[in-house]
Length: 76
Image (cartoon, rainbow, N blue to C red; front, side, top):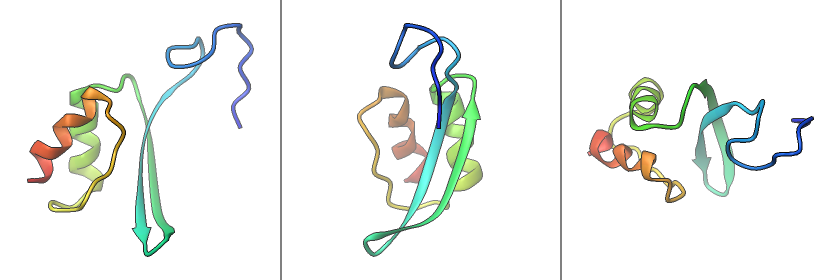
């Protein structure tokens, strides 16, 4: 649970940490989950996370955040 003590909410709110998360899909259930706190959600941090935690060729689903576009380049 995260309690926000400032008035600002949403992405970029004071005190929040950036977290990259990968969750294995086992049929219709979640499998292994890995999370990493990063300084920023950028191509560099996503690249490092994917290279460290995902095997080449894994099928990846993500939101449309531009920083995540680097995943296609790494996984193919």
